[in-house]
Length: 45
Image (cartoon, rainbow, N blue to C red; front, side, top):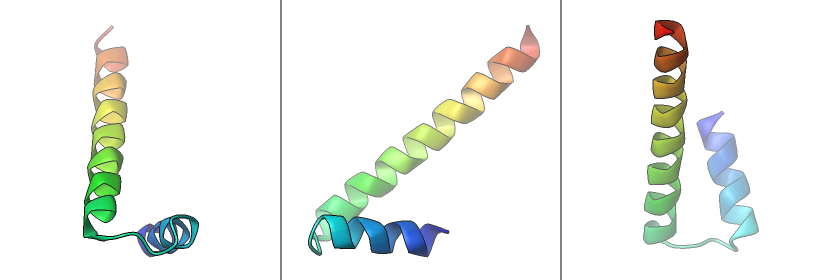
């Protein structure tokens, strides 16, 4: 799954560089974390 998404990102950005990959990984982590927090919050209600 992760490898596939990285392949798609590389194709769409025309290869990109290490910085783009780091930014993408950071965004993915933030989205994952946000989803986790949202799930915990909704469970507490």
